[in-house]
Image 1 (cartoon, rainbow, N blue to C red):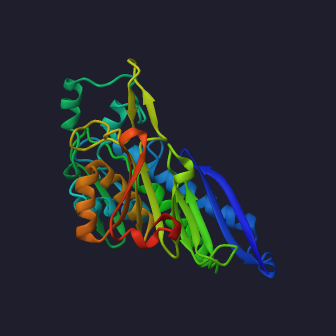
Image 2: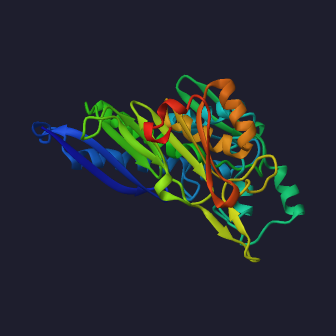
Length: 324
């Protein structure tokens, strides 16, 4: 008889939930508390390497370097950086992990400001942004991260959370667990079936009309969502400021785009694509998605405050029948 195990915790300013099926006789061999300990150790390692909110993390140590200095980093951090470089190209600049100074300026980083930055500040910060301002060299298993501009700072939050989900999934795979759903703040990876012996069903949240959320079926797939409705604040004048910064305008993205969700073969990839495509806007993002056969879904605020769903052709097969 299958038993559903649920493990919960906190990481990266989010809650994580891991659900998996196991047999009664396996509980003595693969104990849930042991599984949670492995998960917590993995998440601690990722935060130690890539959290900009930890002064002693590898990424914070790198950000404090001057131009011409370098830092030896772990393979996991290097893997995330390589994927970020690849997705920067694929999204035509939509994903940019050098935006940390701007994220701060708009009130969402480590040294967050409380007001809207003026044009002079943005012009100064623009000079510190650019994927060419760092490089990664790998040889004989060693990874060296080099800094080419003292003012440039990295922030891999848009992709590290997805990588963390992939790592938890690998832990479960290595333990011989075949049916699971891993979720960190809406970034999810599913394998096998749920307790009803059906593919896992997950919802893309509709922040305006919860009863009309987009429901998808995942069978050995991953989904990640980038949106403006969970992380936003009001500036000194009361204007709503969203947390996703465009690498083109250097300002928060359009408020009418509520979210973009991406289904891919890894959560790291889905996570990075979701952020990158979100910054491009719906027209350009859907054109790229159709050209590359990416499975993406936009939720936008339409006329009369009605939420509209715009999906690429590759996303449609994942929608539950009642959504079509």
